[in-house]
Length: 162
Image (cartoon, rainbow, N blue to C red; front, side, top):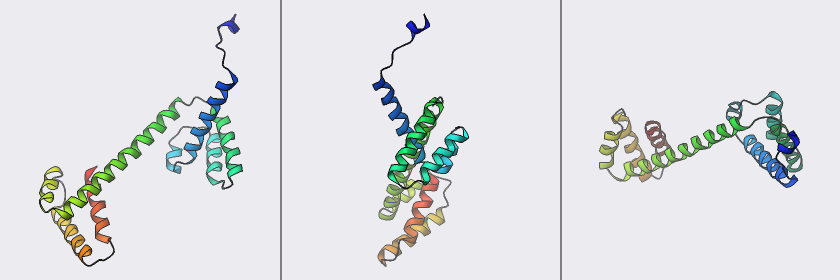
């Protein structure tokens, strides 16, 4: 009677699921070691991911991804999918913060009034330091020097936008 209640899954569906899990495994292997360690995988899967990262040959890498997919199919991946979503949303947030910092840097370099607005939005900023960075960036641009202060200004702004 139990067999009658089981839902039939075609070979095609099984193969599609297998390919999705393999693709997920490949995405995991492309993450940094720190991000990979945040997943709660058994040691065998962590070793397979590490091996996948180190393999350079395309054919061998494909086989390793298939093996990784096989191992991943044996465990519940619901937490792993949630963790991957968190990592993706964090990287999107990082990109947005970088864009904001770039926009502010350009505004601060081109418009003197932008500094007042920036200080109002971020009152904890060291006013003297940001003024010095802007001034040095202006000198750098006029003298066609390497963008040392330009980069420092970006890092300083980015550190305060978060």
